[in-house]
Image 1 (cartoon, rainbow, N blue to C red):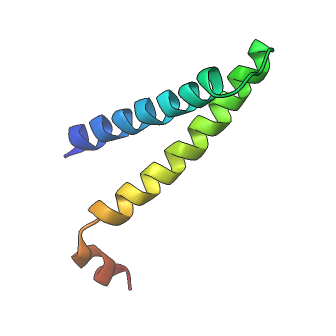
Image 2: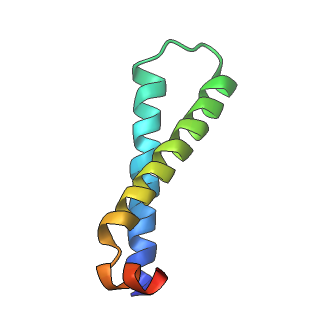
Length: 69
């Protein structure tokens, strides 16, 4: 189970930063590479948090929600 969690986390990280790179490098016209790197990191982090939160909410077993209440 730990392996699947780590694999899923790695896939979410890969997805997040590839989306961020796409938007920064192909959809914006930023000249400075330091600014591109910073925006890529920040946007990748935002996409990661959103994707992780959605996946935890959808995948989390319903019986665990009742335990937490």
